[in-house]
Image (cartoon, helix red, strand yellow):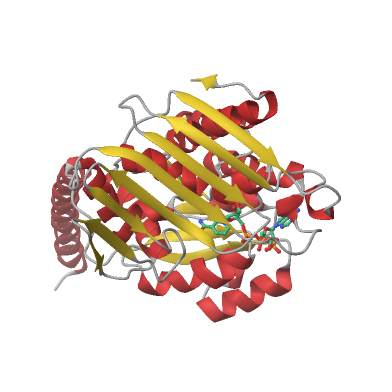
Length: 379
Ligand code: NDP
């Protein structure tokens, strides 16, 4: 083979190969453009990445263990003021140490594509700031309850979510578990007839006087903000209505060092438009209150405990008999986090969006005002 012939063959081969490659590239480009337009569902078993902010009691004892039961959520990052604790937990839960943040470099989480959703588990007074920063970092946010210290803070969080086009959900775990869902179904379908009265009580005897829950700036208020909110939520989710009037009374034991800044006990009454009345209590001063009862013309049904993490029980009373209803026991936190992941995957509005937290804070502001002034507050 002469040199010139060999060169010609090589040149032709090159042109042909280039031609083929271009054709393949064009085809691939067309397919790619088509693929971009095509909406495909997530593969089965896909899990979104979560960052947990604030590694305290709830995060360590409930939230992190719950990931083992999640179908759509996995923990991929931790945010903490204590690197030793964060490193220890990262090792335990298989979190890459490069995904450990502190409160100063938290905003750089925006550059971490592994993180889809941020869960704020900080003291109440810090929820607003860390939620807004999380949303501004382009992440979806789940905030613990109460959503923030004031309705204005809640509004700021809702606005930040809208501006960033990201989901914002409040961690009302009871809305996602079978016992409370069954009570809601029974109430809304009037299984024992229309509701007359709801009685809801939440209380425990709070310990350490130096804890943040007794500090007004960090907690926003006393027992109402922490556990009275469960009584309020129950009255609202059982009726499916918003209260129109509020009465309230407050009491703190004189001289008790725990209640220098926030209230010990607050009792409140709500009137709902359908005529349902709710009597609710909330206290840091006595223990063992965790229940609600829905009273109708034909009988009543109740949960006790109603809102603890486990061991919920339901009783239904009518025709002079009381029966217990047993339902599946599920991890509230796994259900709640998977709900949020599902909403992000499918671009749906969460069952308990930021607006729901805002409604509670607005009503709680009314409860405090009613207790302070002794007047009925109309909403
Ligand atoms: P903890 O006090 O146990 O933990 C709060 C964590 O926040 C701390 O461990 C710390 O984490 C971080 N933190 C940052 N700054 C401060 C500060 N100035 N003071 C105190 N802690 C700080 O609280 P909980 O885990 O009990 O509660 C956290 C949130 O979860 C609250 O909003 C609470 O209302 C809510 N909650 C909800 C429950 C539910 O059932 N849905 C139940 C219990 C609580 P680090 O050391 O990592 O920085």
